[in-house]
Length: 232
Image (tube, rainbow, N blue to C red):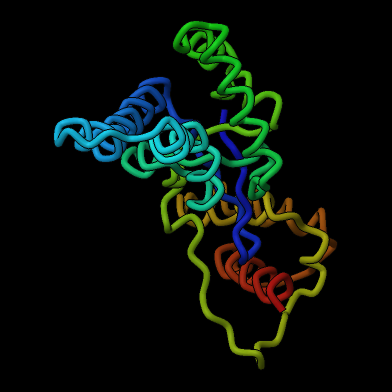
């Protein structure tokens, strides 16, 4: 299973959901952050014999940790310190950017999961069995955690800078979708002559475009025209 992400250039990327191991390690790193914060705000004052009030303990020592996941994911584009270290982040299942509501729902369900399921055993099972890398909070919020690096190479998504004076040769490329163009780019990368021919024929059938260009040049022109039309 992959998660579709649309770039600002209208190119479709597919991201691989983070593995259970990735998520567990990210959580452990976040726990190290928790330990460091508790040591800094409570442990050091205690070692120095400084008495702190209950108000200080709750407001400075405990409250930031309670809101850590919510605040960090909201401010760091779906990431906590642990997720940054593991190069993973939260996305909506449709590939869009989560809003504060989605982060809030994930955070509330995380509290419930931790309290009810004694440290996260059931969430781990849920992620493993779900098929989309989702714990209960993800299911409720429509999110998942993905590896930040797309599962396609840069060659799959490479686009050229086009001048505003570029002239579109095949306006009917508007009939194609982002996923169609991604397939065309994959075919161009593979370079198989038979696949190039079948793909060019299919594009012509779908769009009604007529062209005497060779298959590779035709498909390259199609992708360039589509890029220009969808970004201008």
